Image (cartoon, rainbow, N blue to C red; front, side, top):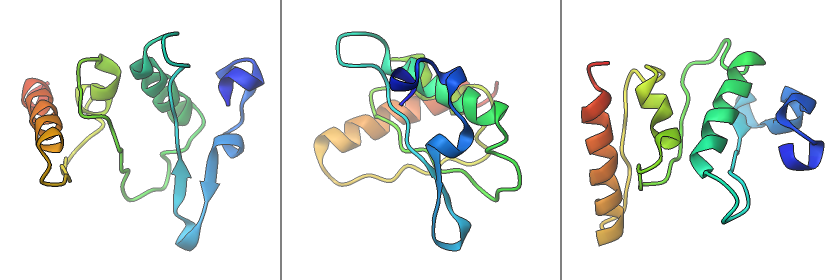
Length: 114
């Protein structure tokens, strides 16, 4: 959406946030086209945009659905910058899901005391 608008500065909160049942606010963000840049950078950009535009005001909780390969720092941003008070990992019993959960757990341990 930011690419089609020109840049994230050309977007309004209403362009990216949809309000649904019981006023649940939903935002989905993504990264650049494959092979063009870092998807984690898209996470950082979207969280900063949401903060700057007041999306986190007057809410009870925030849920992030992140990739399990925490190799890119952008995916760990909610943990790294103390945006998470509690973290719940939900996964299936498949090997790759458990591998991803293990990677996320390592990231949590790394930033737990920061």
